Amino acid sequence: MGRVTAVPIPQPRAETAADATRRRAGRSLGAALLLGAAGSAVVLIASGQTWAEGSAVVAGGNVSLDAGGRDVTGVPAALAVVGLAALVAVFAVRTAGRLLVSALLALSGAGATLAALIGASDSAALDDKAARTTGDTAATIGALTHTAWPYVTAAGGLLILLAGLLALRYGAHWPTMSGRYERDGTPRAPRTPRPAKATAPAVDPDRPEDIWKALDRGEDPTR
Image (cartoon, rainbow, N blue to C red; front, side):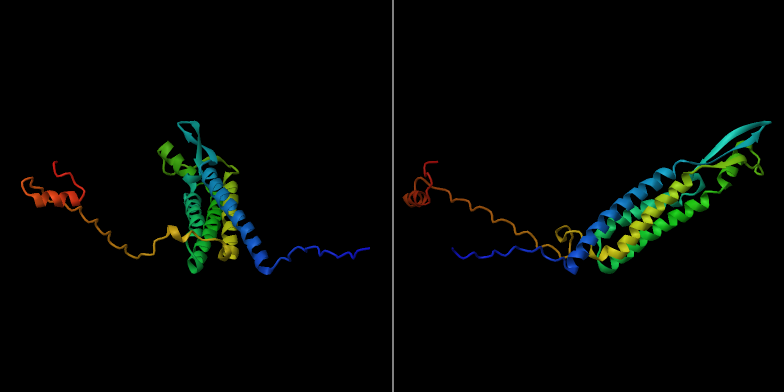
């Protein structure tokens, strides 16, 4: 019988520390983009909803009033825009700049959350509406109720905060904007003008030497 030679079976390559880091960075990148974009959208939408409702007494009757989130405070919506811009800017900067932008992203989320929670029990916006409606600066709102939208806004701010924390932790391993789209500030060399075409000398039909020169150049001396 012939001799049987064992064929080695290739073993799967063990995951290195660099591979694990790249894998975690890829996952964190996707999560940060999702959390940041979703959080900004939630804050912008929820801050435009009704946060508080009540009534004011006008000429012996009650007038229903309501206050939207941006009537109470415009901070969450403004910080959501800042956070969204910071999320995009993370990929345009490197090293220390990326760290600063990531911190700005996290602070935007924290600020939006805090402002929404403070505004959840605020009645000043409705009191102002009551004063304008009744013409009495001392008028206040009655039957005051608050909706759940401030807490939805705060939840959106928390999503932005989580995106910022992921950027602070893993942002150093995220890809950067391609260098071919960036300008290094080097002035471009001036464009060299093309040399003008030489004008063929006029051919005098009465001069035989001009006719022969035109024929040598491949021109028709009779034109």
